[in-house]
Length: 368
View 1 (tube, rainbow, N blue to C red):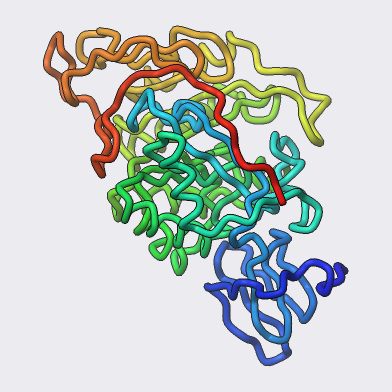
View 2 (spheres, one colour):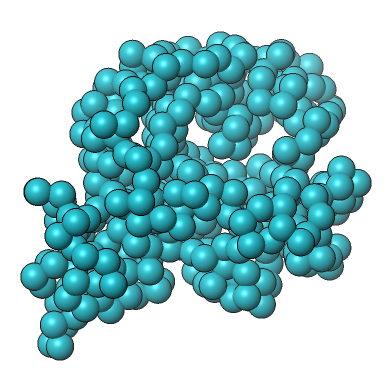
């Protein structure tokens, strides 16, 4: 067990979404794990800790990763395309994915990573200084540092900036609205479509993620897109991909963008091969035949990175990897046939107009 004297900051941030239990343990109900945390112990996520009968969030104002990205990298293709987004993450995660590609921070405790002390208002100021109309909570699972997310998002909205969750969707209903009432867009990582995969490979369950997707679509104004990382032999069966696409169609609608992305061996799944382009092409074909209008391929160079009009086939947004090369939308309609195209093509808060631009390197303050 970790020595809390060495990992707790002088003034740790009190957590939300927990209650005391009679045996001295604390019940954290932020995510469906419902951790029961004893004195001096952490939850599964590594950053929520019980000290003296109070739950603290060690990730608050302690980002372990800061970067400026194109928003297409999240991936979000229908939310202010061509703009930059300030991305940040902390240590820890509430899933145990064997294939995690950010395992160096997501599988670490807060005292095992280099972090930069940044208060919510400082994060927003950093985004504005670097010309970013949006902020992304990403890299590890932002739900576990929800207190920090909420405070940043409030400060961002006051300054006319957008906020984005890049999430595994593993959250309880008790905490969901507290966090997502302040969020403008989300990309949800739907890792597979079997509970067997979720249980064996992520150490969680599928059903709560599906519930989150339905809440987002039907009970909020959050713009959503979905990513499915295809791992050869584990979740690439055409029948499973068909069921996944059909579930999206019938539960969320035909206009929710779906991104099939290529896996590369990492963390505990180094024995699996990289995903072939043909596998992504097949997955996209299946989803389009099911009836989804906007299906993309990621982590490879492909014409399926473009946004096409589902009515006439016109290329509306032409991309190369994560860069926008052409932007042809007439507001939110196809300029050729006039079909309305689902998305948030203009900044909802009006801070910065949408202008296609390539990614650029921007200096980020180093850790202290």
